Image (tube, rainbow, N blue to C red; front, side):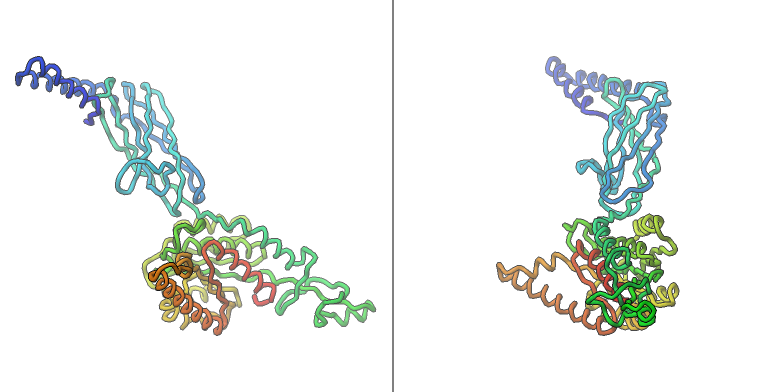
Length: 446
């Protein structure tokens, strides 16, 4: 039995007869009256166990996109259902920041009034702000009697799962990169030439063309100088590896719009943009999420199937508080690609992790593949580097600058070993990585 504030008011009203007849019997009689009223009201309340509850929830939704959970409550009892229904969800998906509750769930309240044999529908607004699978909690029904003095209460498990997909906020950078890709691919007026590119067509020589591109046989046949035009090679392999080890869990500033505060979130955004661009360029995309075990893999998907497959796979990838097994990671790449490919490692330029992990094995990859190491810079460290207002801020700035020098030294060593290095703040990592891919493609290095 659950008592409401009305029961408290009814009990407090006993002070009036007690003031008129201040004897112990008055207290006993009033207490019996209150108990009888509560018992009758409880007995007349509809049983929450006789309420059939069905839940409807979207299978998946993108991060930051509004959704809703619908509950259909059917009153199978013979009494009128006057109830307060609490729909419980994890706090990370509720749209109402003032939702009540403790522990793993918060609940949104709905007042319902359903006659016997009828049904009603209630909707809980959702606004997810964390990736992953989010399971609904139990539905709690508090059924009141006609006087709303006492109530019956029961929690009913109603399964429901919402998969929150990555936001892909970096999608806004895709049109401009596709325009550049079309120029490189020969669909616009600009043609490019580079080592390892594919022959596209012949055209007349114009001032400024590279003389090495002159086709002397065609020139002799036509009686005019003719040059070859080239386009970037297609059907190459792009292998994107997300490091999901302990460094991926590091927070890089909760104010970043596209990251949610961790390196992994920014790496996922960069992965989605690069994969979409490479697929449009005609390359085959493989994506691996790895630390000491394979946490996710997408291979063989292309066209309209690629981004949904990536979103579904990466939605449930979480960082593991373990050191990444770089030798195992190299083995994973070698097991999937043998010919020359672009291998993009999305990790951190943390000196201790790189020196003992990535550096010893980067030669194994760079000897066969074109390697790009992409890392997220911490915007809070960048803010510390600018501080000069007090002695404490000067010390913080010195520590931040020292960290920058250490990462720059690591990047220089990686470049000496044949790898390209991209380090950028969370909101610019994805477009910079896409630009690096286009530059490598234009130079014929893929």
